[in-house]
Image 1 (cartoon, rainbow, N blue to C red):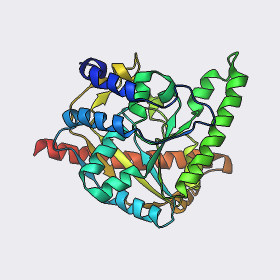
Image 2 (image 1 turned 135 degrees about the horizontal axis):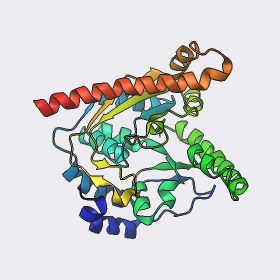
Image 3 (image 1 turned 90 degrees about the horizontal axis):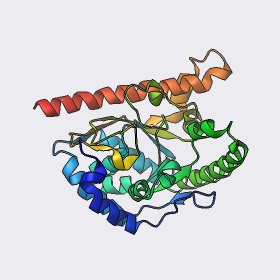
Image 4 (image 1 turned 30 degrees about the vertical axis):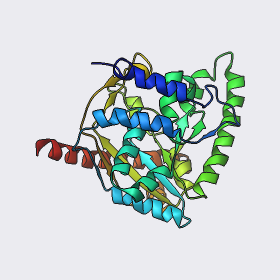
Length: 295
């Protein structure tokens, strides 16, 4: 299979030239607004990769979430994560549905790992096409906490994440939908841990009023587990997203908490409940994709 760099290298290098976000993250460079020049170039790629029958089941629920957000309620969008093109495809499909859906898409702010800024200029050029709040993910901190730089990295992570939480609070209270990948990483076949929902998702759900869960079937950019995004494999595909109705975060969390054997278990059962709901939405997306392909 061809890589994104091999097929779209010329567009990608134009995006690198357009890039203006920092390649190193500090606590005062956390909120990063979308680079629409690069978005337009990504959409040219998606015009070729996202097949004509691709669809968004339940997109009206994202619109309802947006309307509630505009009315002053806080809104959380929880997505499955398979590809570095999950967010591009989300925006692409929403914009295809019309102006108000496009407005809903543009209200979205994604919680994004700082690796996407720091991995390479190529990755950053794609990443910065969508508005983000950059965080230092717990998975990454676990990997360096016991190294020589561990103490310094812990301090850095605290500074970055405190700033990120302040920005998230600002965004959620000013009409922005906050997007979260509950696994914190892309799913990779043969790596069960990449499907694990992080316990930290409980903190997010606790801090919001409304949520929509989104399952994804189909993938136009397959993970290359041996390299970075520029070496991911392009895969023209029929992509189907499926969104749940708007859910009350407090009701969802209380129902999950009722299953906890002890207070120490609450974060685990909430994470498990999130995993089950995303799996449910994934099955809906898969069923619709199978129907479309077979029609």
